[in-house]
Length: 283
Image (cartoon, rainbow, N blue to C red):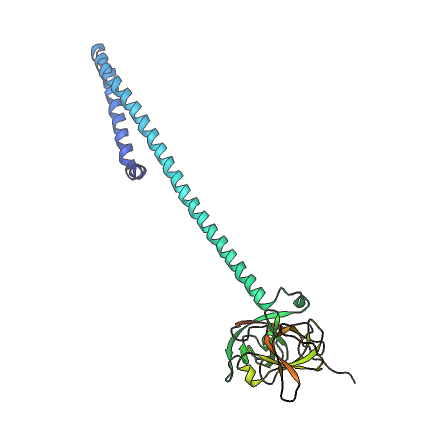
């Protein structure tokens, strides 16, 4: 590039111009002491030459200065383009992080108004116990984080399970489909009460059994089932699941099959409600 060439050879270029000027000064001084004819002759020859060199030197210097300015502007443009690209990448990264945070909040149900009155803590599922792999899980929050036995665990704004064992930096949680679990519930549509229970055969399918408190209950397929005010370990009003089938037992009593609202199979992050909700009957 021309600008780079001038930068690399500017010392040689300037030395040449300086030598030429010195030579012309010496000649001019010599001629100053010569005869009028010689002085006139030399002046006649060298004056145009000096004019040409002067004009040429001025043009070259101006051109070099202009090219250097252009090079400087190009460098500034490259720098600004790089800065703009960096800022764009930063904006894209922030947008991506906000998008992931929004998805996480929706998955955990943090935006649900029900949780605004509770202290909560997010935890990751880091393992499962032997047996049915999604019935008992291990989370990466424990006693050091303030976790206590029987604290409720939710996912997607719905009941997932509760803490059953606490260690220093991790805990065990039992899902509501585990065959020893039971939750007092109520139908959102009718207010009819029942008990959602884990069942070994249904647990293999990721489902729950809903026993009706009264056989006159008007439960229907598609009804949403919520935790009731009588629920032990869980606050009132949490979503439990949706009725997918009504069955009749051998003794003639009706019961329902619930599909849990929380994803029992693929959940990786859960939300702990950092409070105990044990229901106690008064004497």
